[in-house]
Amino acid sequence: MALDAEAAAAALSSFLRDFPAPLGPAEPLPWSAAGSGALSKAEVPGALAERARGLLGGRGVSPLLAASLIHAAVDEVLQTDLTEFKQQSVETEGEGDEERFTLLDGELLQRCFFNKLRDICLEWQKQLPPLRPLKRFLLVSIHAIRNTRRKMEDRHVLLPEFNQLFGLSDDVDRAYFAVFDGHGGVDAANYSATHLHVNVGLHEEIVKNPAEALKCSFQKTDEMFLFKAKREKLRSGTTGVSALIVGNDLHIAWLGDSQVMLVQQGKAVTLMEPHKPEREDERARIETLGGCVTYMDCWRVNGTLAVSRAIGDICQKPYVSGDADGDSFELTGSEDYLLLACDGFFDAVKPYEVVDLVLDHLMQSEGVGLHAAERLVAAAKENGSSDNITVLVVFLRDPQDILADCLRDPKGLGAGDDARSSPFNFLSCEAAATQ
Image 1 (cartoon, rainbow, N blue to C red):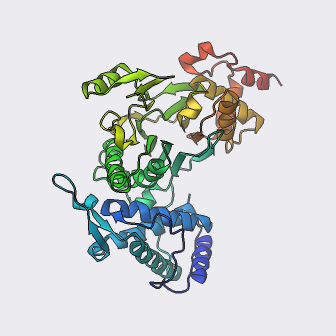
Image 2 (image 1 turned 135 degrees about the horizontal axis):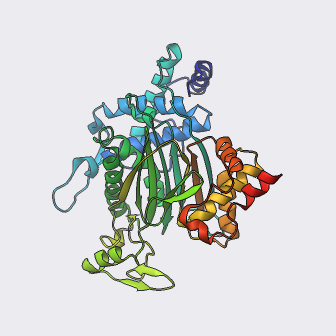
């Protein structure tokens, strides 16, 4: 998908009309002051990028242009001498890491960043540089609800413009998607949604070994959040699942019971096993460390958490591990869509049911997949889920083609081995085929 030069020029002009001069030291930041406190060096790129994404997205700037602007501005900040923003050094036990343990003044950094962003807008307004387009368009359907819970603690990230955000200029398309399900507060989920993809994009192995970059970035994000949690007395945690599409390869990584599944030629494909305390290997790991797994309405680590791996949960480390699992798969072109969701969905809807629900939605909408996630969330709620529910569907084929294949061969498409227990398999396709 190419960038519309006329639309880009209009967006840049609008931005500069609203911000005709650099921000002075006493002027308010153009975004919420919440979260403008101290930052570790490792947190700088993620925190700045997140602020800019919110600002530019709220102004209707195209994601492609926004990602390119953010990369240019963040890169300029990172090339400056950050010691001028040094606020304090944090004393830690053992040998420290300057990147994590030196704190910088977040408000001063954000002001500097905004002014650099404005300077780049001014420069690009005069001469828009050639910006790399997206080679592959992926339709994404996302829906998230608080449901009956008091707070919404889920977060999600969709980043088809991964290359543009991190300045990757090779000939390989990349796209990143993630769902985070927080517990004990939303801090860990917010933090992961801000920093995990940045850690992936800046990882030294992102080009040569993206699977390793994705998996290792979970642990780095966990370490970064634990440092923040310790200094700010935060107790929350979050499960997380992420998918990184690199050319024709799919890389996934996860902690806890948020899950990702694939539907291929109308069949549900299991890609992973969630981290739950009752898993034999997880129980053994926890007990070897001196913890315990007990049953209290469900299996729990030390009688508290119902997941055995997560980012955060400082009071339950090391029993609740931040070491992610991962896997990689080759995409052949026969895959229909990828689905990422939290346990509020998967506890109520089985993988084989997903296939039928999506096909039913496509028939109802005449092949329009944009609101497929809403249908799935509604099904989870109808099946009794009271938890926060987030569902993210990434169509790897045109939904019109998926529907057409179903109508051509309604009995040839199923939900894989799980189809045996489905009470309504193929019903919608057969009904449509006979109309």
